Image 1 (cartoon, rainbow, N blue to C red):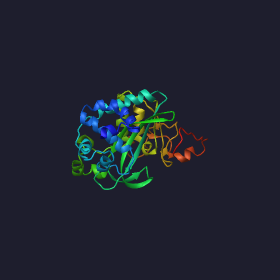
Image 2: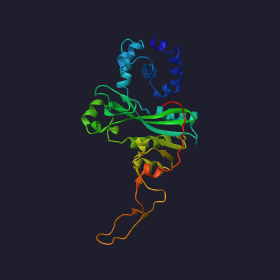
Image 3: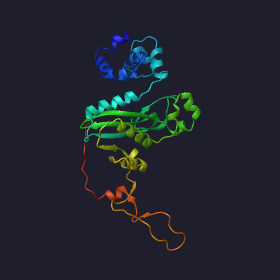
Image 4: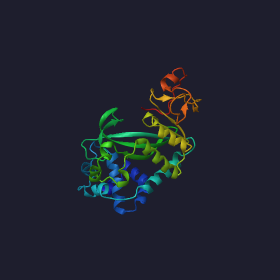
Length: 280
């Protein structure tokens, strides 16, 4: 009954869109449950836990849906490659941009993996939430999210027992910064032959020198936000090795000019506002 119900209206459109991805799941039970679970997530109703979603979907018992979410073990790589392939066919080109950002999912309680008091971008303040690193392919006014990876804060990575209880896979238990996660996903998307010309990021990633250096090291063109107090040098800075008058000789080169706050250097520049889409 639930299978027939999902074919009506937007749910039918959803199932047709999911069809090529369902084939990659390779298991009939997962292929049946996946459209129902996704429909429950994006459909009406405020409560998105398994039991209320199962009731709204007319499943009666929620055991099968719960098993799909909590007990199923399957390789997501084919689905992610399929998503990258479809996104590239829709938007991929040298004119496309890859936008690195993070998004927050407000949560109650402490059992959800990665949940902790941290900055919630959706709320604009500190809140109990999960944070995910997102990569979005965009061209013109059309964005398609191609990667979404959960970030684990220190309160999780410093507590192996907590991660084990929550079922965090061993390969994801090591502490990683959000910029490190983003670079890992950039590499995977390039391996999947996703085409884009520029990487964009806000100051959350832009203030990370290793992130900027990693993009340059991959010969990628990029533009990132930085805090106004970020210390920067003018473009003609050079490294010199001045002789020491007294004491121990210098071991490293130093810049030939003093760094300044970005706001001070750019204060006299001519600015122009640029908008690429309507909305927030």
